[in-house]
Image (tube, rainbow, N blue to C red; front, side):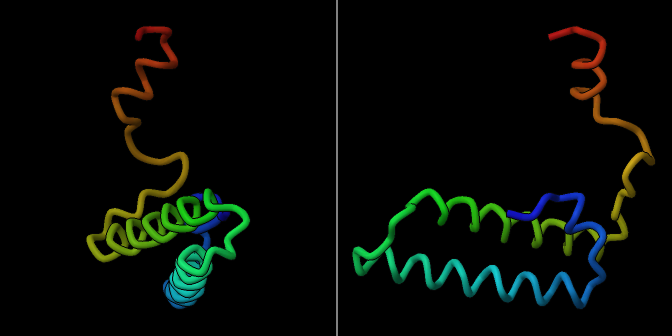
Length: 86
């Protein structure tokens, strides 16, 4: 699984290529699951979440919201966690 920070470092073409590879892996995992050959059924969920991460990042870039690491305001929930409030 690729971390979100690693995905952010990819350019648009590399991100599109990664998305195609990941979707192909989802296809193969679903096929294996249907045939009863799947050893690790949890892998399908992991790969599907990675597809969602890539799609989210692409959408953010389309909208010009590609937040760089360490820039911009922190979400309120993250700020509350660091202050010890729950």
